Image (cartoon, rainbow, N blue to C red; front, side, top):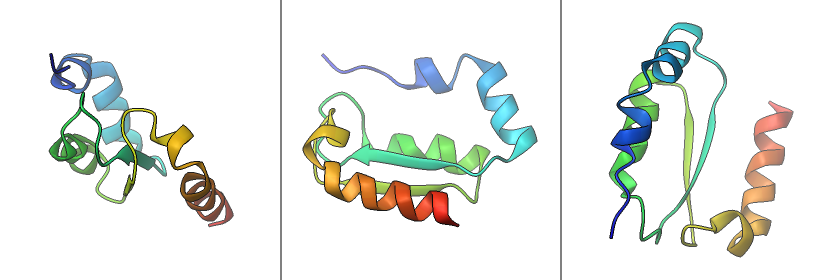
Length: 81
């Protein structure tokens, strides 16, 4: 069973509207092998915040755990900018 993130990114317009209107600095870390979310779903973030930094980690749904070193490096770089 796959989870459809369109339910998260498509319906709650308040989040998508806030992202689009405010254009915050945005870091998206996505597990390349996540069985629940498609890689293409990051497109919603890129549409709302074109300057978003989107990175695909070598991991699944818990990529922040399984690719912790890579995630930590990307987070540090993002915060230092």
